Length: 87
Image (tube, rainbow, N blue to C red):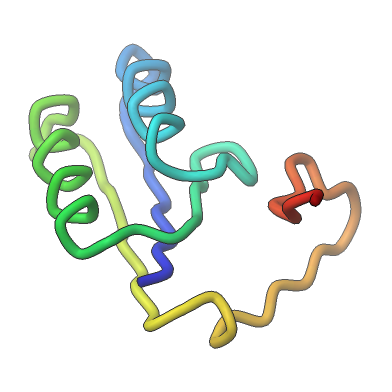
């Protein structure tokens, strides 16, 4: 499945959340990650995030699609971290 994760966490937890998500997904912009995950890995990511955020202060949004072909991605301005794979 293709996953997009967007988060808004308190400043002191931003680095922890960012570093954690980089292990699983592509960083595309401040507080935005995307990429392919198996359902098991997606559950692993969500479980790991529970220990890194404070539910009463922070927010994490999960968008899931069957695959990347369902996503139309358009960038206006600088594409900070393109997710194209070079072969």
